[in-house]
Length: 174
Length: 174
Image (cartoon, rainbow over all chains, first blue to last red; front, top):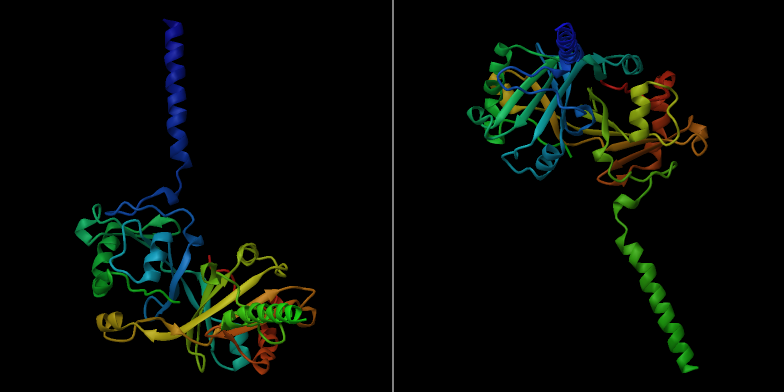
């Protein structure tokens, strides 16, 4: 019985360690967005460029819209709606005056991307999974951590003005 | 002699046709920038993003800075000077207010990339070939056609304020 107890203890200990490993290795990047269950797509920073933009007001940022291969092909062809498998990434950075050109011009001239700002956002097209939001799932992350449910409830509504373009504001910039 | 003349005529005709083919197939995209002799790098629109910017004043554009693999690696590592083989592309587009968000916010809010504007520009690092301009060659194209020599004489001088960063204004936007 002592041997059996030792084996059981050993198994329990091993299982505990195994169970603990994924827990302790879990980083913020493994978390999914609420409502839509979207994780940060690996390698998105290497995706190709769809377009760029500047937001004024409270947002006050410079942003780039990148797309995975499905998104880039669809954007270039300009065909709507976007096919399932489309993922669009919106990166944004602080809107910073460039010191060197301000000096050269004697006034603010160039505004460049500073540190990351306003999170990283993703739109994922899956017409079945996200049928209630016209096929789009949304995700917002700051420092790898998803925003809360209240925030994610605003995504679809905010994209409604672009309904005629399948909820995507950005057109491909050639 | 008649046969020889016919053969010679035939050869001359063939050579003329062969010579004419590359000439007639030559498009604006085959032209090189003056002074630096740089052609538009094939596939540059697929390159990865270094950063984004907005220029005010006369330029009034939104721009994206893309890099070939050498440029991206160097930009991410932040090591200066950039190695030979670096090519940096600067694309720019009209700075257009986005109608949908202006309506939603009741004032201009989002500015997006419109049609291409202010040409496409390239910086090519070749420390031997471009020794007199600190290792950088420059090129400016509008609709695939290079700008003139006078324009290309301004490139190096204009990048001098960024000498401490190896003449590249843009830092990698994470």
